[in-house]
Image 1: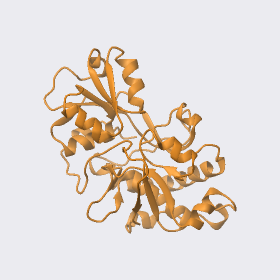
Image 2: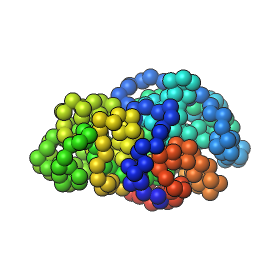
Image 3: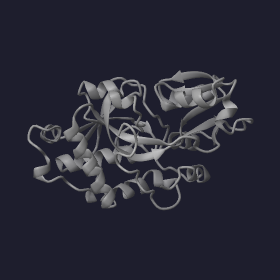
Image 4: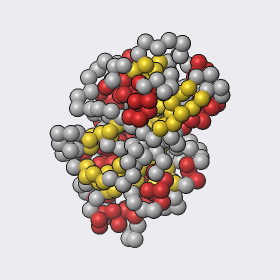
Length: 306
């Protein structure tokens, strides 16, 4: 796939209508409607045949309900961010959710439940949401609690510092320093492994982490590059340094044990990738700041836990 490292080189490209990002927003139960997006990309998205909506299945329940309930974010630019003018939720993850809703229901009707990184597993297990689209990195540990379709995208951890800060260019430079990370994110384990002498402080959402960095509560913030570049684009007082030092495959979170729905979602992923819909969704979101053609999607089922 095209490396997300290119993002830093084109961070000056304007992101119209986008603002602060988060990997897991710090809200517990708010539900906001994601208005159907009437555009050519979603219009091209496939619809499942009647035979694929099996009787008694999760797919049938969603179709009968008339909307897909997605655990996600409302303030993650390029990924899932609510447009303050239209109220519509926009971005790569948001449009993936709309495309899945269209596949099941015939229309891109989505309701987004604003999730935190600490609550995603519970929202799936108790049936509050049908799926999670929220830069949800697949790990074997998480796969013990939830199922993952995909992976559907791959990014990596990198480092942000205050503009002009010196002496930090790679993970090892974090040793002996106070480092900020999102609660319940892969950044914590990565920092412990690569900079074992670092002191880690955690916060529940990406905006809180950015604010902590600006307040000098840590000298660096480790997070997914996709999110950090969006943060730096919005706030010129922070900058991304170095290159991604992990590979983080994003999965679509599903309720554990629903193998039927997992196969259905994976089959849908295969279809939209083969038809070019996935690529068009990428171009209209992440592709607005990453130069070049759309990357090759990661192979479905290619990582432990998927």
